[in-house]
Length: 281
Image (cartoon, rainbow, N blue to C red):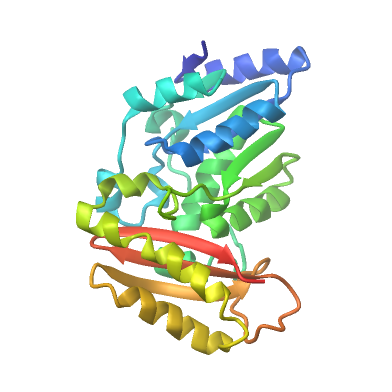
């Protein structure tokens, strides 16, 4: 049975003792409302490390929409049994006061990495992510930390932050976990109306179809095609679809781009925002 810790000082002491015993520490940061996608990260972490720590903390500094923060699903009574069943050793559930005893005024410079796609439409979001993840890394001091590839841009930002701040933490990216109908698992899926939930799988279906059309359509034509396919459903509205360099996330001009190409999309289903991505090359 794992332990639940809510104080930073207590967790630091526990981790210190475990490290003295030579234990390897793996860490999965979450905002709760857990699903199979999170649990796949946890299972990978349990397999790779002696001790698995999972945090549940809805971080206010990464929400640029106060309503989104207010409505974000919170269900610890459901999350904790799921984590115990998956073999988690420590669940860290701090209050906002514990994480931010005073306001975090740090501003990170990620160059263009946080200016495109999500960064363009959610200003300040990735700065908030970098603030909270760096604070959690300082508290947990893990050997490895696990993040889902659904948040592809976030994963790139965290890798950049680790290099920037000189952490020796190994960042492990884990594959997207999907519902049987292809929809990428997300805590926000719980907020979809039945009607919007029915339409949402079109996002993944369109990306999968698009990937087979790279020999027919130019990059520009492909972007237009994907947007039109998704927008043809009245329940869905594309915010952006980008074909980008898999490392820099800058837009690509053609399919003979020297690096990998990733297609990233954000779609509004009613007032719920869904994201997904797929490697095109």
